[in-house]
Image (tube, rainbow, N blue to C red; front, side, top):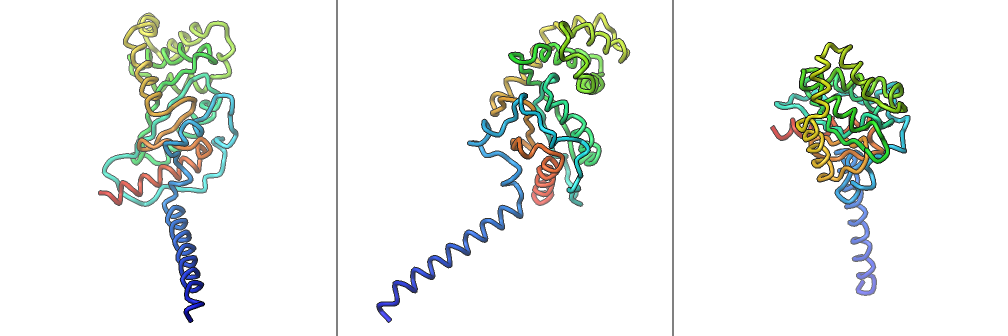
Length: 240
């Protein structure tokens, strides 16, 4: 009995270890957050780059997830750091519009500027156009127009005349729009977004945060976004 005792103890320890791993794995799987969100150490590696456009974010992808049947006192906040000349951002735009429609007052989508001026020559002036339109109450309309027509202006020598045309089509005061594009106020708002993004680990676009947690680039798909939103909705509901 004495000789077999050490082997019995080892066997018990091994069994306990296996059980602990199974419980921990199931717990992480049930929560879902392990697959959706980046850890602090992963942020730089999981941020998207504009050279890696993905068809996974297609708005035509099947929607396998639906919003949970929970009530929350305040919406889940989704922040997108984007660049109007970024192809993956252009792909993501209609996906976010669809998801925003699906979740209604359970979700608030916030766009933050992160123009990658070293590789996109029109990124900054496009951001300025969006902010100049905001001054006349037409940010969302200009935002949609810039992404919806990205291929029409991305290769132009000068994008400003095109953006001025969009302002005219949206019924804006074009003279004021032109002045506001170059105003310190507009430039400061863009710079503030960029500084904020750099401070939380943004290095490329699109980068999405849900309730302040960075979504892994691999999870920036229609169902990945829904999964992240659902996790935060459930947490909000449980914490109320």
